[in-house]
Image (tube, rainbow, N blue to C red; front, side):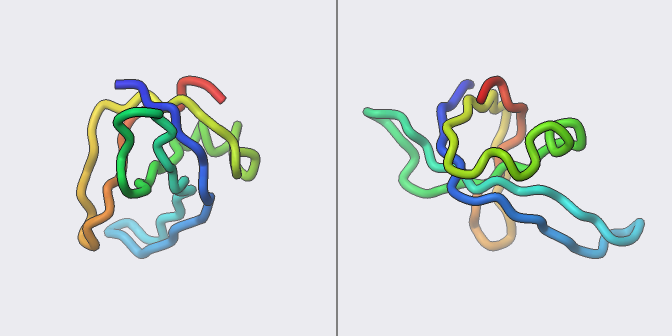
Length: 87
């Protein structure tokens, strides 16, 4: 599924995992569909390659996201899995 979204914020999440400190670049996204849009914002974690290419450059831009699944986090937020198709 492809979604056109606006990047609301970009932040770095850090936590200690099984193999030590984990750092992730997380985008908070807002669906921009005119008719049937998501009510809430959702998150997307940049891959290592995407972080090198886009880190710090996407704030307030509209991106096309290819989504293959959504995960529900412990706090009820949705996190998309997929890739950035276009900026």
